[in-house]
Image (tube, rainbow, N blue to C red):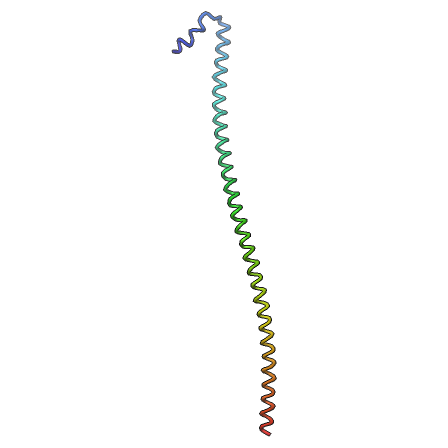
Length: 120
């Protein structure tokens, strides 16, 4: 088969044959270079797809973390409100205890006074 490919070159001058050889060499070199670049392109496209997937994964993780953060902030707000309500209720009850303690002390004094009067 290579004989048929070379047949068209018969009868050409050595200078033309040299030029054809140079051009064929250049074509082979360009083919190899094209293959290398095609391989580089495919490698870069694969790396790009991998990076895009990584970015998508990070975006999804970021969205999940933002939702979780929002949920935690809402929970913190809810707990803060509950803490304030409990604190207020505690103050009210402490106030009631103080009032009742004062009433108890007053009643004790009244009882002591009455006991003293009874003894007389």
